[in-house]
Length: 612
Ligand SMILES: Cc1cc2nc3c(=O)[nH]c(=O)nc-3n(C[C@H](O)[C@H](O)[C@H](O)COP(=O)(O)O)c2cc1C
Ligand code: SF4
Ligand code: FES
Image (cartoon, rainbow, N blue to C red):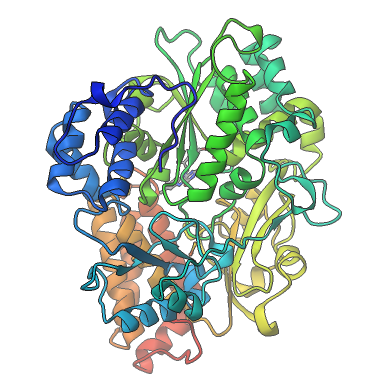
Protein backbone atom coordinates (compact mmCIF):
# COMPACT_ATOMS: atom_id res chain seq x y z
CA UNK A 1 0.00 0.00 0.00
CA UNK A 2 1.50 3.34 -1.05
CA UNK A 3 0.49 6.16 1.29
CA UNK A 4 -0.17 9.45 -0.46
CA UNK A 5 2.40 12.19 0.08
CA UNK A 6 1.12 15.09 2.23
CA UNK A 7 1.93 17.64 -0.48
CA UNK A 8 0.67 15.49 -3.39
CA UNK A 9 -1.27 17.23 -6.13
CA UNK A 10 -4.30 14.99 -6.48
CA UNK A 11 -5.46 13.77 -9.87
CA UNK A 12 -9.16 12.93 -10.15
CA UNK A 13 -10.09 9.47 -11.46
CA UNK A 14 -11.76 11.19 -14.43
CA UNK A 15 -8.55 12.95 -15.38
CA UNK A 16 -6.67 9.64 -15.25
CA UNK A 17 -9.22 8.15 -17.66
CA UNK A 18 -10.71 4.70 -18.02
CA UNK A 19 -8.24 1.89 -18.45
CA UNK A 20 -8.35 -1.69 -19.55
CA UNK A 21 -7.77 -3.53 -16.27
CA UNK A 22 -6.78 -1.05 -13.56
CA UNK A 23 -9.55 0.71 -11.66
CA UNK A 24 -10.01 4.45 -12.31
CA UNK A 25 -9.06 5.11 -8.67
CA UNK A 26 -5.78 3.27 -9.08
CA UNK A 27 -5.00 5.05 -12.33
CA UNK A 28 -5.52 8.34 -10.50
CA UNK A 29 -3.26 7.25 -7.64
CA UNK A 30 -0.52 6.28 -10.09
CA UNK A 31 -0.79 9.69 -11.74
CA UNK A 32 -0.58 11.36 -8.32
CA UNK A 33 2.51 9.30 -7.46
CA UNK A 34 4.02 10.35 -10.80
CA UNK A 35 3.74 13.97 -9.69
CA UNK A 36 6.18 13.36 -6.80
CA UNK A 37 9.20 12.99 -9.08
CA UNK A 38 11.05 15.08 -11.65
CA UNK A 39 10.73 12.18 -14.12
CA UNK A 40 7.58 10.02 -14.53
CA UNK A 41 9.59 6.80 -14.68
CA UNK A 42 10.57 7.20 -11.01
CA UNK A 43 7.00 6.38 -10.05
CA UNK A 44 7.33 2.94 -11.65
CA UNK A 45 8.12 0.79 -8.59
CA UNK A 46 5.39 2.50 -6.60
CA UNK A 47 2.92 2.04 -9.45
CA UNK A 48 3.78 -1.66 -9.74
CA UNK A 49 3.34 -2.17 -5.98
CA UNK A 50 -0.10 -0.58 -6.15
CA UNK A 51 -1.11 -2.46 -9.30
CA UNK A 52 -0.01 -5.79 -7.82
CA UNK A 53 -1.92 -5.10 -4.66
CA UNK A 54 -5.10 -4.44 -6.65
CA UNK A 55 -4.72 -7.12 -9.32
CA UNK A 56 -2.87 -9.88 -7.44
CA UNK A 57 -0.09 -10.08 -10.03
CA UNK A 58 1.36 -8.09 -12.90
CA UNK A 59 -0.17 -9.51 -16.08
CA UNK A 60 0.83 -8.34 -19.53
CA UNK A 61 -2.28 -6.14 -19.62
CA UNK A 62 -1.26 -4.48 -16.32
CA UNK A 63 2.27 -3.92 -17.62
CA UNK A 64 0.92 -2.27 -20.77
CA UNK A 65 -1.39 -0.02 -18.81
CA UNK A 66 1.27 1.08 -16.30
CA UNK A 67 3.62 1.77 -19.22
CA UNK A 68 1.03 3.99 -20.84
CA UNK A 69 0.40 5.94 -17.61
CA UNK A 70 4.12 6.63 -17.10
CA UNK A 71 5.03 7.31 -20.74
CA UNK A 72 7.18 4.19 -20.93
CA UNK A 73 7.54 1.31 -23.34
CA UNK A 74 6.05 -1.98 -22.12
CA UNK A 75 9.52 -3.57 -22.28
CA UNK A 76 10.84 -0.94 -19.84
CA UNK A 77 8.18 -2.01 -17.37
CA UNK A 78 8.55 -5.72 -18.09
CA UNK A 79 12.30 -5.74 -17.39
CA UNK A 80 11.70 -4.04 -14.04
CA UNK A 81 9.00 -6.58 -13.13
CA UNK A 82 11.40 -9.43 -13.83
CA UNK A 83 14.33 -7.86 -11.93
CA UNK A 84 12.63 -7.44 -8.55
CA UNK A 85 11.68 -10.52 -6.49
CA UNK A 86 8.65 -8.82 -4.92
CA UNK A 87 6.92 -8.46 -8.29
CA UNK A 88 5.01 -11.43 -9.71
CA UNK A 89 4.29 -11.80 -13.40
CA UNK A 90 2.07 -14.83 -12.82
CA UNK A 91 -0.58 -15.59 -10.22
CA UNK A 92 0.48 -16.41 -6.66
CA UNK A 93 -1.79 -17.68 -3.91
CA UNK A 94 -4.20 -15.26 -2.27
CA UNK A 95 -1.97 -15.83 0.74
CA UNK A 96 1.58 -15.96 -0.57
CA UNK A 97 3.62 -17.36 2.33
CA UNK A 98 7.29 -16.43 2.21
CA UNK A 99 9.83 -17.90 4.60
CA UNK A 100 13.26 -16.35 5.02
CA UNK A 101 15.90 -19.07 4.62
CA UNK A 102 18.97 -16.88 4.86
CA UNK A 103 21.62 -17.57 7.48
CA UNK A 104 20.13 -16.16 10.71
CA UNK A 105 16.72 -17.73 10.03
CA UNK A 106 18.26 -20.96 8.73
CA UNK A 107 20.20 -21.29 12.01
CA UNK A 108 16.87 -21.05 13.86
CA UNK A 109 15.08 -23.75 11.83
CA UNK A 110 13.58 -21.95 8.81
CA UNK A 111 13.96 -24.97 6.54
CA UNK A 112 11.53 -27.01 8.68
CA UNK A 113 8.86 -24.34 8.15
CA UNK A 114 9.25 -24.37 4.38
CA UNK A 115 9.12 -28.15 4.27
CA UNK A 116 6.09 -28.27 6.55
CA UNK A 117 4.15 -25.76 4.44
CA UNK A 118 5.06 -27.48 1.18
CA UNK A 119 4.17 -30.94 2.50
CA UNK A 120 0.89 -29.79 3.94
CA UNK A 121 -0.13 -28.09 0.73
CA UNK A 122 1.45 -30.65 -1.60
CA UNK A 123 3.24 -27.84 -3.44
CA UNK A 124 6.66 -27.14 -4.78
CA UNK A 125 7.90 -23.50 -4.85
CA UNK A 126 6.24 -21.55 -7.66
CA UNK A 127 3.01 -23.60 -7.56
CA UNK A 128 -0.35 -22.38 -6.30
CA UNK A 129 -2.99 -24.57 -4.64
CA UNK A 130 -5.84 -25.52 -6.97
CA UNK A 131 -8.28 -23.28 -5.13
CA UNK A 132 -5.85 -20.37 -5.64
CA UNK A 133 -5.65 -19.78 -1.89
CA UNK A 134 -1.98 -20.47 -1.10
CA UNK A 135 1.51 -20.46 -2.49
CA UNK A 136 4.82 -20.83 -0.66
CA UNK A 137 8.18 -19.28 -1.41
CA UNK A 138 11.63 -18.81 0.06
CA UNK A 139 13.00 -15.32 0.48
CA UNK A 140 16.52 -14.00 1.11
CA UNK A 141 16.50 -12.12 4.45
CA UNK A 142 13.54 -9.99 5.46
CA UNK A 143 15.53 -7.62 7.69
CA UNK A 144 14.39 -9.12 10.95
CA UNK A 145 17.26 -11.54 11.56
CA UNK A 146 17.14 -11.31 15.37
CA UNK A 147 13.66 -12.80 15.48
CA UNK A 148 14.12 -15.63 13.01
CA UNK A 149 12.67 -17.64 11.55
CA UNK A 150 10.65 -14.91 9.91
CA UNK A 151 7.62 -15.35 7.68
CA UNK A 152 5.79 -12.75 5.63
CA UNK A 153 2.37 -13.24 4.07
CA UNK A 154 1.81 -10.94 1.09
CA UNK A 155 3.01 -7.52 2.18
CA UNK A 156 1.76 -7.77 5.76
CA UNK A 157 3.82 -7.13 8.92
CA UNK A 158 6.19 -9.98 9.68
CA UNK A 159 5.45 -13.08 11.68
CA UNK A 160 8.60 -13.24 13.80
CA UNK A 161 9.94 -16.27 15.68
CA UNK A 162 7.58 -18.25 13.46
CA UNK A 163 6.69 -21.84 14.40
CA UNK A 164 5.16 -24.88 12.72
CA UNK A 165 1.98 -24.00 14.62
CA UNK A 166 1.96 -20.55 13.00
CA UNK A 167 2.14 -22.19 9.57
CA UNK A 168 -0.76 -24.48 10.54
CA UNK A 169 -2.78 -21.48 11.69
CA UNK A 170 -2.05 -19.62 8.46
CA UNK A 171 -3.16 -22.62 6.43
CA UNK A 172 -6.32 -22.86 8.53
CA UNK A 173 -7.11 -19.31 7.38
CA UNK A 174 -6.35 -17.74 10.75
CA UNK A 175 -4.74 -14.36 11.09
CA UNK A 176 -1.26 -14.70 12.61
CA UNK A 177 0.43 -11.45 13.55
CA UNK A 178 3.53 -11.14 15.67
CA UNK A 179 6.32 -8.62 15.67
CA UNK A 180 8.73 -9.40 18.42
CA UNK A 181 12.09 -7.80 17.83
CA UNK A 182 14.09 -6.75 20.90
CA UNK A 183 15.66 -3.30 20.46
CA UNK A 184 16.96 -1.43 23.47
CA UNK A 185 19.59 0.67 25.15
CA UNK A 186 21.21 -1.56 27.79
CA UNK A 187 21.26 -0.30 31.37
CA UNK A 188 24.22 1.94 32.10
CA UNK A 189 24.56 3.08 28.47
CA UNK A 190 23.73 6.65 27.51
CA UNK A 191 21.61 6.03 24.45
CA UNK A 192 20.49 8.59 21.92
CA UNK A 193 19.39 6.60 18.87
CA UNK A 194 16.65 4.57 20.50
CA UNK A 195 14.26 6.13 23.02
CA UNK A 196 14.94 5.04 26.62
CA UNK A 197 13.28 2.02 28.29
CA UNK A 198 12.47 0.23 25.05
CA UNK A 199 9.48 2.49 24.31
CA UNK A 200 8.50 3.89 20.92
CA UNK A 201 8.47 7.64 20.33
CA UNK A 202 6.50 7.89 17.13
CA UNK A 203 4.23 10.86 17.77
CA UNK A 204 5.68 14.20 16.84
CA UNK A 205 4.47 15.88 20.06
CA UNK A 206 6.50 13.44 22.16
CA UNK A 207 9.58 14.15 20.08
CA UNK A 208 9.09 17.92 20.10
CA UNK A 209 8.68 17.79 23.89
CA UNK A 210 12.30 16.57 24.13
CA UNK A 211 13.62 19.48 22.02
CA UNK A 212 12.99 17.65 18.76
CA UNK A 213 13.23 19.60 15.46
CA UNK A 214 15.00 22.46 17.30
CA UNK A 215 18.27 21.61 15.50
CA UNK A 216 16.51 21.47 12.14
CA UNK A 217 15.19 24.96 12.87
CA UNK A 218 18.69 26.13 13.78
CA UNK A 219 20.17 24.55 10.64
CA UNK A 220 17.65 26.24 8.33
CA UNK A 221 17.26 29.57 10.12
CA UNK A 222 20.70 30.26 11.59
CA UNK A 223 23.45 28.09 10.10
CA UNK A 224 25.31 28.00 6.82
CA UNK A 225 25.65 24.58 5.15
CA UNK A 226 29.47 24.57 5.58
CA UNK A 227 29.12 25.12 9.33
CA UNK A 228 26.79 22.11 9.67
CA UNK A 229 29.14 19.88 7.69
CA UNK A 230 32.06 21.09 9.81
CA UNK A 231 30.44 20.09 13.13
CA UNK A 232 29.53 16.65 11.76
CA UNK A 233 33.04 16.21 10.34
CA UNK A 234 34.64 17.23 13.65
CA UNK A 235 32.44 14.70 15.44
CA UNK A 236 34.06 12.03 13.28
CA UNK A 237 30.70 10.49 12.37
CA UNK A 238 31.28 7.63 9.92
CA UNK A 239 28.53 6.25 7.71
CA UNK A 240 26.61 3.33 9.21
CA UNK A 241 25.69 1.77 5.85
CA UNK A 242 28.76 -0.47 5.74
CA UNK A 243 31.69 1.39 4.20
CA UNK A 244 32.29 3.75 7.16
CA UNK A 245 33.07 6.89 5.14
CA UNK A 246 33.24 10.16 7.14
CA UNK A 247 29.85 11.85 6.69
CA UNK A 248 30.95 15.49 7.00
CA UNK A 249 33.65 14.91 4.37
CA UNK A 250 31.12 13.31 2.03
CA UNK A 251 28.82 16.31 2.36
CA UNK A 252 31.78 18.53 1.44
CA UNK A 253 32.03 16.81 -1.98
CA UNK A 254 28.78 18.42 -3.08
CA UNK A 255 29.25 21.36 -5.47
CA UNK A 256 28.60 24.84 -4.08
CA UNK A 257 26.84 26.09 -7.17
CA UNK A 258 25.84 23.23 -9.41
CA UNK A 259 23.37 25.23 -11.46
CA UNK A 260 20.88 22.39 -11.03
CA UNK A 261 19.07 20.78 -8.10
CA UNK A 262 21.00 18.72 -5.54
CA UNK A 263 19.47 15.76 -3.76
CA UNK A 264 19.87 13.79 -0.56
CA UNK A 265 19.20 10.11 -1.26
CA UNK A 266 18.61 8.18 1.95
CA UNK A 267 19.54 4.53 1.96
CA UNK A 268 16.97 2.55 3.93
CA UNK A 269 17.27 -0.58 1.82
CA UNK A 270 18.75 -2.61 4.69
CA UNK A 271 18.97 -5.95 2.89
CA UNK A 272 22.29 -7.31 4.15
CA UNK A 273 21.56 -10.58 5.98
CA UNK A 274 22.35 -10.12 9.67
CA UNK A 275 21.35 -6.42 9.55
CA UNK A 276 18.06 -5.21 10.99
CA UNK A 277 18.82 -1.91 12.75
CA UNK A 278 17.42 0.82 10.45
CA UNK A 279 13.99 -0.73 10.76
CA UNK A 280 14.15 -0.21 14.54
CA UNK A 281 14.74 3.51 14.09
CA UNK A 282 11.65 3.88 11.91
CA UNK A 283 9.52 1.81 14.26
CA UNK A 284 10.67 3.54 17.46
CA UNK A 285 12.14 6.96 16.71
CA UNK A 286 11.16 8.11 13.20
CA UNK A 287 11.18 11.84 13.94
CA UNK A 288 14.82 11.93 15.02
CA UNK A 289 15.66 10.34 11.70
CA UNK A 290 13.48 12.86 9.82
CA UNK A 291 15.12 15.73 11.68
CA UNK A 292 18.49 14.33 10.55
CA UNK A 293 17.14 14.26 6.99
CA UNK A 294 16.09 17.93 7.20
CA UNK A 295 19.56 18.90 8.50
CA UNK A 296 21.28 16.77 5.84
CA UNK A 297 19.26 18.45 3.09
CA UNK A 298 20.39 21.86 4.35
CA UNK A 299 24.02 20.74 4.73
CA UNK A 300 24.27 19.86 1.04
CA UNK A 301 22.32 22.94 -0.16
CA UNK A 302 19.44 20.85 -1.36
CA UNK A 303 15.69 21.23 -1.12
CA UNK A 304 14.63 17.63 -1.26
CA UNK A 305 15.40 14.21 0.15
CA UNK A 306 14.27 10.91 -1.36
CA UNK A 307 14.16 8.00 1.04
CA UNK A 308 14.55 4.52 -0.45
CA UNK A 309 13.00 2.00 1.90
CA UNK A 310 13.12 -1.74 1.47
CA UNK A 311 9.83 -2.93 0.06
CA UNK A 312 9.12 -5.66 2.60
CA UNK A 313 9.09 -3.21 5.52
CA UNK A 314 5.33 -2.80 5.97
CA UNK A 315 5.28 -1.49 9.56
CA UNK A 316 8.33 0.81 9.22
CA UNK A 317 6.84 2.26 6.03
CA UNK A 318 3.55 3.02 7.76
CA UNK A 319 5.34 4.63 10.73
CA UNK A 320 7.55 6.69 8.44
CA UNK A 321 4.64 7.97 6.36
CA UNK A 322 2.67 8.84 9.49
CA UNK A 323 5.68 10.74 10.81
CA UNK A 324 6.10 12.60 7.50
CA UNK A 325 2.44 13.62 7.53
CA UNK A 326 2.84 14.90 11.11
CA UNK A 327 6.01 16.82 10.26
CA UNK A 328 4.42 18.48 7.20
CA UNK A 329 1.39 19.42 9.31
CA UNK A 330 3.71 21.26 11.73
CA UNK A 331 5.53 23.03 8.88
CA UNK A 332 8.84 21.24 9.56
CA UNK A 333 8.85 20.16 5.91
CA UNK A 334 7.30 22.06 3.01
CA UNK A 335 7.90 25.53 1.65
CA UNK A 336 9.47 28.38 3.63
CA UNK A 337 10.61 26.04 6.43
CA UNK A 338 11.34 27.87 9.69
CA UNK A 339 10.78 31.18 7.92
CA UNK A 340 13.97 30.61 5.89
CA UNK A 341 12.26 31.33 2.59
CA UNK A 342 13.54 27.94 1.43
CA UNK A 343 11.74 24.68 0.84
CA UNK A 344 12.61 21.27 2.24
CA UNK A 345 10.64 18.27 0.99
CA UNK A 346 10.93 14.59 1.72
CA UNK A 347 9.60 11.73 -0.40
CA UNK A 348 9.61 7.98 0.04
CA UNK A 349 10.15 5.26 -2.53
CA UNK A 350 9.77 1.58 -1.79
CA UNK A 351 12.17 -1.01 -3.14
CA UNK A 352 10.99 -4.42 -4.27
CA UNK A 353 13.23 -7.06 -2.74
CA UNK A 354 16.54 -6.73 -4.62
CA UNK A 355 19.59 -6.59 -2.31
CA UNK A 356 21.74 -4.88 -4.92
CA UNK A 357 19.53 -1.78 -4.61
CA UNK A 358 21.32 -1.09 -1.30
CA UNK A 359 24.51 -0.36 -3.25
CA UNK A 360 24.32 3.40 -3.68
CA UNK A 361 24.32 3.61 -7.46
CA UNK A 362 22.07 0.55 -7.78
CA UNK A 363 19.74 2.41 -5.43
CA UNK A 364 19.85 5.53 -7.60
CA UNK A 365 19.00 3.49 -10.70
CA UNK A 366 16.12 1.89 -8.83
CA UNK A 367 14.90 5.31 -7.65
CA UNK A 368 14.82 6.32 -11.29
CA UNK A 369 12.47 3.41 -11.98
CA UNK A 370 14.99 1.05 -13.54
CA UNK A 371 16.62 -2.27 -12.76
CA UNK A 372 18.93 -1.68 -9.78
CA UNK A 373 22.18 -2.28 -11.66
CA UNK A 374 25.07 -0.31 -10.15
CA UNK A 375 26.73 2.38 -12.25
CA UNK A 376 30.39 2.57 -13.24
CA UNK A 377 32.27 5.32 -11.39
CA UNK A 378 33.42 7.99 -12.14
CA UNK A 379 31.23 9.97 -12.32
CA UNK A 380 30.42 9.68 -8.62
CA UNK A 381 26.97 10.53 -7.23
CA UNK A 382 28.22 13.90 -5.88
CA UNK A 383 28.66 14.96 -9.51
CA UNK A 384 26.09 12.83 -11.33
CA UNK A 385 23.54 11.11 -9.11
CA UNK A 386 19.75 11.05 -9.05
CA UNK A 387 18.32 12.28 -12.36
CA UNK A 388 21.84 13.34 -13.37
CA UNK A 389 22.07 15.83 -10.50
CA UNK A 390 24.59 16.07 -7.62
CA UNK A 391 23.50 13.64 -4.93
CA UNK A 392 24.68 12.54 -1.51
CA UNK A 393 23.78 9.05 -0.37
CA UNK A 394 23.53 8.57 3.39
CA UNK A 395 22.41 5.57 5.37
CA UNK A 396 19.26 5.96 7.47
CA UNK A 397 21.03 5.40 10.80
CA UNK A 398 23.82 7.81 9.83
CA UNK A 399 21.34 10.68 9.58
CA UNK A 400 19.72 9.76 12.90
CA UNK A 401 22.98 10.69 14.70
CA UNK A 402 23.04 14.17 13.20
CA UNK A 403 20.47 16.09 15.33
CA UNK A 404 22.23 14.86 18.47
CA UNK A 405 25.64 15.93 17.18
CA UNK A 406 24.32 19.42 16.51
CA UNK A 407 22.58 19.61 19.89
CA UNK A 408 25.37 18.25 22.07
CA UNK A 409 28.42 19.15 20.02
CA UNK A 410 31.27 17.29 18.35
CA UNK A 411 33.23 16.80 21.60
CA UNK A 412 30.30 15.16 23.35
CA UNK A 413 29.93 12.77 20.42
CA UNK A 414 33.66 12.01 20.23
CA UNK A 415 33.67 11.08 23.90
CA UNK A 416 31.74 7.95 22.87
CA UNK A 417 33.34 5.12 20.94
CA UNK A 418 37.00 5.09 19.95
CA UNK A 419 39.27 7.69 18.41
CA UNK A 420 38.49 6.69 14.83
CA UNK A 421 35.08 5.09 15.34
CA UNK A 422 33.13 7.68 17.26
CA UNK A 423 29.65 7.57 18.77
CA UNK A 424 27.19 4.84 19.55
CA UNK A 425 25.76 2.46 17.01
CA UNK A 426 23.00 -0.10 16.74
CA UNK A 427 24.53 -3.55 16.90
CA UNK A 428 22.24 -6.32 15.70
CA UNK A 429 22.89 -9.79 17.00
CA UNK A 430 21.27 -12.95 15.67
CA UNK A 431 21.82 -16.67 15.31
CA UNK A 432 22.57 -19.00 18.21
CA UNK A 433 22.22 -16.58 21.14
CA UNK A 434 19.68 -16.40 23.96
CA UNK A 435 18.58 -12.78 23.51
CA UNK A 436 18.99 -11.82 19.87
CA UNK A 437 18.09 -8.23 19.06
CA UNK A 438 19.36 -4.72 18.45
CA UNK A 439 21.44 -3.06 21.17
CA UNK A 440 22.59 0.55 21.19
CA UNK A 441 26.20 0.63 22.41
CA UNK A 442 29.35 2.69 21.84
CA UNK A 443 31.51 1.63 18.91
CA UNK A 444 34.47 -0.30 20.27
CA UNK A 445 32.36 -2.37 22.69
CA UNK A 446 34.01 -5.80 22.99
CA UNK A 447 32.29 -8.46 20.92
CA UNK A 448 32.37 -10.77 23.94
CA UNK A 449 30.34 -8.25 25.94
CA UNK A 450 27.69 -8.04 23.21
CA UNK A 451 27.40 -11.80 22.90
CA UNK A 452 27.68 -12.82 26.53
CA UNK A 453 26.18 -9.91 28.45
CA UNK A 454 23.63 -8.23 26.19
CA UNK A 455 22.60 -11.19 24.05
CA UNK A 456 22.64 -13.54 27.05
CA UNK A 457 25.31 -15.93 25.75
CA UNK A 458 25.12 -18.84 23.34
CA UNK A 459 22.02 -21.05 23.26
CA UNK A 460 22.30 -24.00 25.66
CA UNK A 461 25.73 -22.76 26.75
CA UNK A 462 27.40 -24.36 23.73
CA UNK A 463 30.82 -23.23 22.49
CA UNK A 464 30.99 -20.89 19.50
CA UNK A 465 32.09 -22.15 16.10
CA UNK A 466 32.01 -19.00 13.98
CA UNK A 467 31.03 -15.34 14.12
CA UNK A 468 30.15 -12.97 11.29
CA UNK A 469 30.75 -9.47 12.70
CA UNK A 470 28.99 -7.08 10.32
CA UNK A 471 26.50 -8.67 7.95
CA UNK A 472 27.24 -11.60 5.64
CA UNK A 473 29.43 -9.50 3.34
CA UNK A 474 32.10 -9.31 6.05
CA UNK A 475 34.72 -12.06 6.50
CA UNK A 476 33.76 -14.69 9.09
CA UNK A 477 35.84 -15.05 12.27
CA UNK A 478 36.75 -18.11 14.30
CA UNK A 479 35.67 -18.29 17.96
CA UNK A 480 39.10 -17.31 19.31
CA UNK A 481 38.55 -13.76 17.96
CA UNK A 482 35.65 -13.10 20.37
CA UNK A 483 37.68 -10.57 22.37
CA UNK A 484 37.96 -8.16 19.44
CA UNK A 485 36.48 -4.69 19.94
CA UNK A 486 33.66 -3.75 17.59
CA UNK A 487 35.21 -0.76 15.82
CA UNK A 488 36.66 -0.22 12.36
CA UNK A 489 40.37 -0.51 13.25
CA UNK A 490 40.16 -3.43 15.67
CA UNK A 491 38.09 -5.55 13.32
CA UNK A 492 40.40 -4.82 10.43
CA UNK A 493 43.33 -5.97 12.53
CA UNK A 494 41.40 -9.14 13.33
CA UNK A 495 41.04 -9.88 9.60
CA UNK A 496 37.53 -8.66 8.96
CA UNK A 497 35.46 -5.44 8.84
CA UNK A 498 32.78 -3.71 10.88
CA UNK A 499 30.29 -3.48 8.00
CA UNK A 500 26.84 -2.81 9.40
CA UNK A 501 27.62 -4.16 12.89
CA UNK A 502 25.21 -7.07 12.39
CA UNK A 503 26.70 -9.99 14.34
CA UNK A 504 25.68 -13.57 13.47
CA UNK A 505 26.74 -16.19 16.02
CA UNK A 506 27.02 -19.87 15.10
CA UNK A 507 27.48 -22.53 17.77
CA UNK A 508 29.66 -25.63 17.50
CA UNK A 509 26.87 -27.71 15.96
CA UNK A 510 27.09 -25.53 12.84
CA UNK A 511 28.55 -26.92 9.66
CA UNK A 512 30.71 -24.13 8.17
CA UNK A 513 30.27 -25.55 4.66
CA UNK A 514 26.51 -25.23 5.01
CA UNK A 515 26.86 -21.69 6.35
CA UNK A 516 29.09 -20.78 3.39
CA UNK A 517 26.61 -22.47 1.05
CA UNK A 518 23.61 -20.47 2.33
CA UNK A 519 25.58 -17.25 1.92
CA UNK A 520 26.82 -18.25 -1.55
CA UNK A 521 23.21 -18.99 -2.54
CA UNK A 522 22.32 -15.46 -1.44
CA UNK A 523 25.01 -13.77 -3.54
CA UNK A 524 24.17 -15.96 -6.55
CA UNK A 525 20.55 -14.86 -6.19
CA UNK A 526 21.41 -11.18 -5.76
CA UNK A 527 24.16 -10.52 -8.33
CA UNK A 528 22.83 -8.10 -10.92
CA UNK A 529 24.76 -9.98 -13.60
CA UNK A 530 26.56 -7.07 -15.26
CA UNK A 531 30.15 -8.19 -14.49
CA UNK A 532 31.41 -11.54 -15.70
CA UNK A 533 33.51 -12.19 -12.59
CA UNK A 534 30.58 -11.66 -10.26
CA UNK A 535 27.96 -13.41 -12.39
CA UNK A 536 30.10 -16.50 -13.01
CA UNK A 537 31.95 -16.47 -9.68
CA UNK A 538 28.83 -16.43 -7.51
CA UNK A 539 27.35 -19.30 -9.54
CA UNK A 540 30.62 -21.22 -9.25
CA UNK A 541 30.85 -20.89 -5.45
CA UNK A 542 27.31 -22.16 -5.07
CA UNK A 543 27.95 -25.15 -7.32
CA UNK A 544 31.24 -26.10 -5.64
CA UNK A 545 29.96 -25.65 -2.09
CA UNK A 546 26.86 -27.68 -2.84
CA UNK A 547 29.03 -30.46 -4.18
CA UNK A 548 31.34 -30.41 -1.15
CA UNK A 549 28.44 -30.33 1.28
CA UNK A 550 26.82 -33.34 -0.45
CA UNK A 551 30.06 -35.30 -0.05
CA UNK A 552 30.95 -35.27 -3.75
CA UNK A 553 33.76 -32.71 -3.51
CA UNK A 554 37.45 -33.10 -4.23
CA UNK A 555 40.43 -31.39 -2.63
CA UNK A 556 41.05 -29.49 -5.89
CA UNK A 557 37.66 -27.81 -5.35
CA UNK A 558 39.18 -25.93 -2.42
CA UNK A 559 41.96 -24.61 -4.63
CA UNK A 560 39.38 -23.64 -7.22
CA UNK A 561 37.44 -21.65 -4.60
CA UNK A 562 40.66 -19.90 -3.65
CA UNK A 563 41.55 -19.01 -7.24
CA UNK A 564 38.01 -17.83 -8.08
CA UNK A 565 38.16 -15.40 -5.13
CA UNK A 566 41.31 -13.78 -6.51
CA UNK A 567 39.74 -12.73 -9.80
CA UNK A 568 36.51 -11.57 -8.15
CA UNK A 569 38.10 -9.01 -5.82
CA UNK A 570 38.60 -5.38 -6.81
CA UNK A 571 37.72 -6.02 -10.43
CA UNK A 572 34.04 -5.26 -10.79
CA UNK A 573 31.58 -2.35 -10.92
CA UNK A 574 30.54 -2.72 -7.28
CA UNK A 575 31.61 -4.51 -4.13
CA UNK A 576 29.06 -7.33 -4.21
CA UNK A 577 31.60 -9.45 -6.04
CA UNK A 578 34.26 -8.78 -3.35
CA UNK A 579 31.74 -9.61 -0.63
CA UNK A 580 30.85 -12.93 -2.24
CA UNK A 581 34.54 -13.76 -2.56
CA UNK A 582 35.32 -12.77 1.05
CA UNK A 583 32.50 -14.93 2.33
CA UNK A 584 33.31 -18.11 0.43
CA UNK A 585 37.10 -17.64 0.65
CA UNK A 586 37.22 -16.94 4.38
CA UNK A 587 34.88 -19.75 5.36
CA UNK A 588 37.05 -22.10 3.32
CA UNK A 589 40.40 -20.81 4.65
CA UNK A 590 39.38 -20.36 8.28
CA UNK A 591 37.54 -23.70 8.52
CA UNK A 592 39.63 -25.68 6.06
CA UNK A 593 39.87 -28.85 8.21
CA UNK A 594 36.05 -29.02 8.27
CA UNK A 595 35.89 -28.58 4.50
CA UNK A 596 38.47 -31.34 4.08
CA UNK A 597 36.52 -33.67 6.36
CA UNK A 598 33.50 -33.36 4.03
CA UNK A 599 35.70 -34.53 1.21
CA UNK A 600 37.46 -37.36 3.07
CA UNK A 601 34.31 -38.60 4.82
CA UNK A 602 32.16 -38.10 1.70
CA UNK A 603 29.46 -36.25 3.57
CA UNK A 604 28.69 -33.73 6.26
CA UNK A 605 30.38 -34.53 9.60
CA UNK A 606 28.03 -32.22 11.55
CA UNK A 607 24.95 -34.36 12.30
CA UNK A 608 23.31 -31.73 14.49
CA UNK A 609 23.87 -28.83 12.11
CA UNK A 610 21.08 -26.59 10.84
CA UNK A 611 19.54 -27.41 7.46
CA UNK A 612 20.67 -25.04 4.69
C1 LIG B 1 26.11 -4.84 -2.36
C2 LIG B 1 25.97 -3.66 -1.47
C3 LIG B 1 24.82 -3.52 -0.70
C4 LIG B 1 24.68 -2.41 0.15
N1 LIG B 1 23.54 -2.30 0.90
C5 LIG B 1 23.37 -1.21 1.69
C6 LIG B 1 22.16 -1.03 2.44
O1 LIG B 1 21.24 -1.87 2.40
N2 LIG B 1 22.06 0.09 3.19
C7 LIG B 1 23.04 1.04 3.23
O2 LIG B 1 22.87 2.06 3.89
N3 LIG B 1 24.17 0.89 2.56
C8 LIG B 1 24.35 -0.20 1.78
N4 LIG B 1 25.50 -0.32 1.05
C9 LIG B 1 26.50 0.77 1.12
C10 LIG B 1 26.12 1.91 0.18
O3 LIG B 1 26.65 1.66 -1.11
C11 LIG B 1 26.65 3.27 0.66
O4 LIG B 1 28.00 3.15 0.96
C12 LIG B 1 25.93 3.80 1.90
O5 LIG B 1 24.53 3.82 1.73
C13 LIG B 1 26.41 5.22 2.19
O6 LIG B 1 25.84 5.71 3.37
P1 LIG B 1 26.74 6.02 4.65
O7 LIG B 1 27.93 6.79 4.17
O8 LIG B 1 25.86 6.81 5.53
O9 LIG B 1 27.13 4.69 5.23
C14 LIG B 1 25.69 -1.44 0.22
C15 LIG B 1 26.86 -1.60 -0.55
C16 LIG B 1 26.99 -2.69 -1.37
C17 LIG B 1 28.25 -2.84 -2.17
S1 SF4 C 1 29.84 -6.67 -8.99
FE1 SF4 C 1 28.08 -8.00 -9.27
S2 SF4 C 1 26.37 -6.91 -8.38
FE2 SF4 C 1 28.02 -5.40 -8.66
S3 SF4 C 1 27.63 -4.51 -10.67
FE3 SF4 C 1 28.99 -6.23 -11.04
S4 SF4 C 1 27.60 -7.98 -11.45
FE4 SF4 C 1 26.38 -6.36 -10.54
S1 FES D 1 15.38 -12.07 8.38
FE1 FES D 1 16.08 -14.07 8.02
S2 FES D 1 18.24 -13.83 7.82
FE2 FES D 1 17.52 -11.79 8.02
